[in-house]
Length: 73
Image (cartoon, rainbow, N blue to C red; front, side):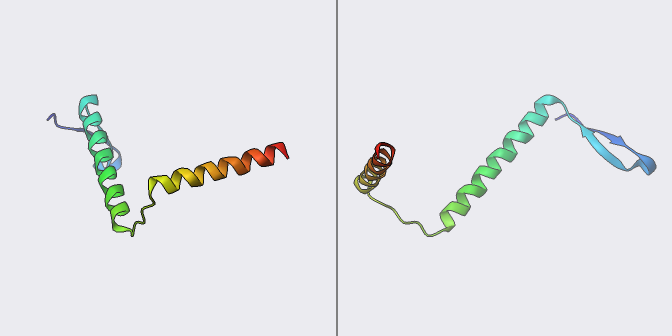
């Protein structure tokens, strides 16, 4: 891994870093993976209620029919 280069300001205070694009892309990918893991963990920590597929389809169909009736009323 190449050594990052720092852009400094007064008193050698680090202001920014310069990375090769390949290293930058690798870091971004790892951050996105970490975010996915955190979102998964958050979702799994909540109490989940599952609805049978047949019930979901029935509710969607009822909703569609109501919308169609409103359009034609």
